[in-house]
Amino acid sequence: MAVLNILKYPDPRLHTVARRVDAFDDRLRQLVQDMAETMYAAPGIGLAATQVDVHERVIVIDISEDRSDLRVFVNPEIVSTSDDHVRFEEGCLSVPEIYETVERPERVTVRACDAHGKSFTLDCEGLLAVCIQHEIDHLNGKVFVQHLSRLKQSRIRSKLVKRDRQAA
Ligand code: NI
Figure 1: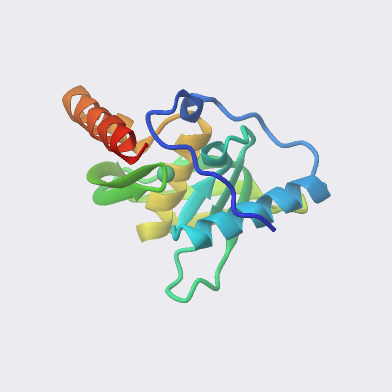
Figure 2: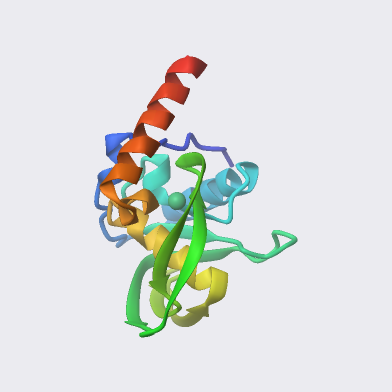
């Protein structure tokens, strides 16, 4: 297993649209393991392959308190969304130390495959619904700050660029 490097906004590679996975092989399962290790090490509650510069439709999530409930979504698709929306303060491993409120559908139904290609459908609500929508956005090349106003986005961008320069 390996902890992978996480791309940081505004890295343009975060805006790559990921392609579908069609081989459910050992390479995929290795990627899933490495992504899980990277997420736990960060620590975070979700990670999309896009964030580790692998542009394939793979997500790992663990929202449990004791980090014992790893969920893997390969080729996830939202098949239905609720009309009700919720506002939730989101953060992202690719946008360190920035937390902003985003509005999203409160409940979604997701269809995906596990790392062995077995398909499943899952009704998500609460934190899991927020998290899966946030991660699917990543696979579509979208970072959560893109849900905010242009002004806020440019403020966050300059803050992160400045912080990066100071760290260098
Ligand atoms: Ni994120």
